[in-house]
Image: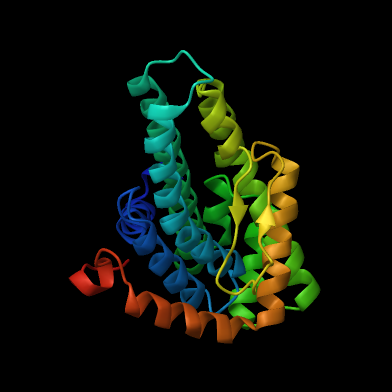
Length: 258
């Protein structure tokens, strides 16, 4: 009997390495480093990983600010009858969900890249990666270059696939039980500012649970990364993570790679 792909020992080693590279859900800066490493591992082809590194860096400080605000509003918000403890518990559950989503997307992106590189495009497709995404990554990583228009389209398809597979359902479910009106409304309207955006160039959400708006802003983040320069962005990201590295990641710990 043929062994299922997802039980293949080599594939399982890749998934285990992905979990180590992504770190615990709370370790956003560690995840940013993992994303940057993954960008380099893909020979600069997985631009989704480079932009996502800045998503993790942004979240690492933005969620701290939101937590401080929630601690205050949990005490002084007169617009709800929810008990103070339940207010904060709901916010904490939402933040934990965001970190879990970030972790899951990192794991799946790592598995996508390394499965194609080490086991081949057919194995990646057998594990559920869309054939067009797997084939385009395979072709580009082999060539170590990619046409700019194809690269943007591949980023778009990769971003949309992750939204449909991991992000949207979890976000919708998380907001369904987030009944503290004040913080729920604030969390629906985050302002996103990555280090390469420039002053006054934040992306302000109208409705964070709107998948189309998340994809739209993800493409804006990509276009700004291209304008900044990908290699320049990778270098400045590396410097930023050396200054404030967060928890030591798998390379610092000497953990094995697949």
